Image (cartoon, rainbow over all chains, first blue to last red; front, side, top):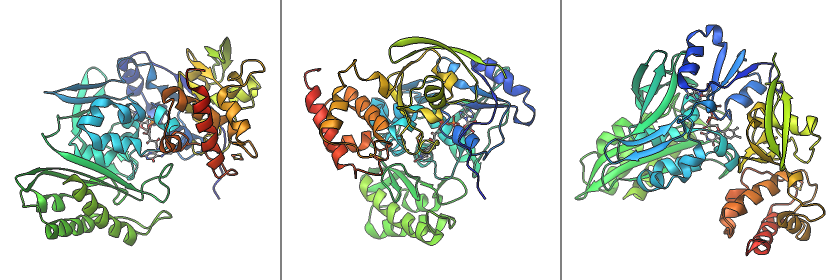
Length: 293
Length: 159
Ligand SMILES: Cc1cc2nc3c(=O)[nH]c(=O)nc-3n(C[C@H](O)[C@H](O)[C@H](O)COP(=O)(O)OP(=O)(O)OC[C@H]3O[C@@H](n4cnc5c(N)ncnc54)[C@H](O)[C@@H]3O)c2cc1C
Ligand code: FES
Ligand code: FES
């Protein structure tokens, strides 16, 4: 039987004033004594529901200054700080203009209240297969910058970041500092389509992101990101390869969409059957490609 | 475990308080300050009945640790009226019968207020977006849209 507790378990709270201070805490962190959070929109319900082990101390990252940035530079591209909220990414003029797929994906998450609190970083660190920002970040070849104590730093491609449902390559002593996305290819078009029974306040049954450039009638820079149809968000690499460099035509699009569907590995659950999800991947990949042309 | 000292502005008044770190903003408002206008429906961010405005933005107070109120400005449904004078959004909900049982209403009004502060002339679609995180099990929403439209009309000219 599932018992739902309405209250949080007893625990402490700290709000470090710098990233170094937060990393210091995580360095000596036996058995998940400390748990970092940003918006808490994933962590708080899980703690209330006793779905995850309660930490002794919650570490609120919002005390770290200069981490809620959304910076754009023609050369270096876009930097999204770990504390940038889903709402700020959704409404950022530069993201709307340069990376509309990310703005759309962010806007498809939950409600304004949740988007005002939740972060894009929390969305990917939480790593559910249906995380709406993931297909967009996969299409945009995002990289994440992970920090650990004493200047420890590594960059991970988003394609290597997710390891399984709820699992990422983040080590217990690491904090994701920012997400970096290169300036998107000139003239690229992109779209995120989220399928869910309710149009708002619902998780994706299938999420499909497509980014491409049409140059002289051929497909270039094709990216297809899929959510909620595999243990992690994935790219449909075979379908991408079929399109890349080929002349735009309807039969090819139909075949590529079918291939993307074959690449998906969905499960049956209370939201939808695996069979339905596969069929919808085909329909939505086709639709998304057409919308990008 | 140690109580945390916090200082914040609640409906225009500065408060100093001590909270346990595992209590939510919703619990603190209702139980410590007796501000029971803010409701608890689901307790997990789904229903919006606990919506308050923190730092100018709507949040689900059931998902916010109370300690996070520190240094913030918080507005609840109790802070909207000036004495006997209801806020235009409240007025419109009364006028247009934007409520039945009333459980969703405080949260709905906070979302509507935040929407109109940001976008004084919302389209019907923008109103739908603005209150997508507030569930109402009674009205079927039509009267709520009408109330918000009426409030927008009434607030024209910065009233
Ligand atoms: C009602 C409701 C509806 C929702 N609907 C959707 C939806 O439609 N689509 C969707 O994708 N999601 C949805 N979510 C989930 C959630 O809102 C998002 O995943 C959100 O982006 C999480 O961000 P956060 O900052 O709140 O994460 P938090 O809860 O703060 O953290 C999430 C996880 O990431 C870790 N973490 C956070 N920041 C860092 C960091 N910098 N470094 C390392 N680890 C970190 C935390 O330890 C935790 O494990 C919903 C949630 C609720 C409550
Ligand atoms: S009680 Fe907070 S959203 Fe339902
Ligand atoms: S009036 Fe009853 S829930 Fe909205």
